[in-house]
Amino acid sequence: MHNSSLTFLKLTFLFYYATTTMLMLQLQVVCLATSTITSTTSTLHPIVLVPGNGGNQLEARLTSEYKPSSLVCKAYPGPLHKDKEGWYRIWFDPSVLLAPYTKCFAERMLLHYDIDSDDYHNAPGVETRVPHFGSTQSLLYLDPNLKQITVYMEPLVKSLEEIGYVEGKTLFGAPYDFRYGLAPEGHPCHVGSKYLQDLKNLIEQASTSNGGKPVVIISHSLGGLFVLHLLNRNTPSWRQKYIKHFIALSTPWAGTVQELLTFASGYTLGVPLVKPLLVRQEQRSSESNLWLMPSPRAFEQSKPLVITPTAAYSAYDIPKFLNDIGFPQGVYPYKMRILPLVEELRAPQVPITCIIGRGINTAETLFYDAKGFDKQPSIGWGDGDGTVNLLSLVAVEHEWIHEKNQSLKIVKLDGVTHTGILTDPASLDQILRVISDVNSPVVGLKHSVV
Image (cartoon, rainbow, N blue to C red; front, side, top):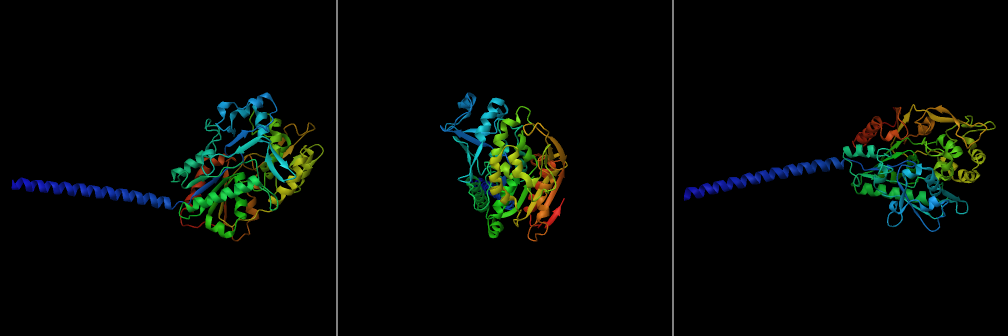
């Protein structure tokens, strides 16, 4: 009896010891894993993604003030495409590629410049909104039902997630209504100014929720111009507190010759089903398109960009060009709102890495014959990324070379296109390298070109 009791006590002790030891080991493993995750996450500076022109979804709703131009437009889109409140995705929807619906799309995307209020507005009866602000959701694909052919930032987001970034925690998106632009001081700009405030708030929230770590901004194309103005419109102390690094992908710092084609004849990105003239009026009405006209600061006065049998236009002749193509209503906002925006490229004094493509045929000169601007021109090609001229992509290099407080690195990738920079393995690798450097204590070079 005594021996069996002793044996039982020994077994009980051994069981207790074994289970306690195992529990302690499990707790140590959990603590180690938690410590590792916390350590890894804590080294990541939060990232905010800012898309380019047409780089996020846009929704619309029609009110009783909307006056459709046809019965087709009156019935489009059907009730199955709308939510309970009447909202539907206007950008991007593949039906816009079909001629009857292209016209409906164009008249709803149209902006109106009101000279009395000195601001841009939607077409009467059309309300628009940007879904999923703060999230990357509307940046991944322009149409989530056609992921393969409308992919946008998904490869970039996936690459960032693979190195530890988490949607809504360390990774955020800042979509916007890309039809609108910004205005200089003294001019109202309701939509653009609100976006800058929303972007500023998002940056501050991202930083605060990550222990006060400053943010890395990654922009594409037009988004880089918005970011530059956000930085320059805030104080140096704000920039120092909230901005760790600015990665600018394919930014048209000085505009692009392609916009002259867009305004003169309409541009459909090579989509064969869409007639350029059907979308030309809508494209001309876009404030951001006007902002992307070639800047006189970078494009020489002696260099003609558009040549016709009777005239030649340089970047210094944009007002005359707008008048001659039949868009005189664009002259006033260009002179009063756009030119002051592009008169200077002020260095924001935060570390910047520009990653650009080159070696792709890019429109440099447009040649029109006697048939006029309603016909597509012959094109003289130059260097660039297929959309933006190399001269514009590297404009900040020449502007900021003597800026002592501006850290700038330009990475040039041969054969990478304007949007390919978001999917090309070489480009993604360069972006991740910058992110890795930013998340380490090593400080980069002040000025360098790769």
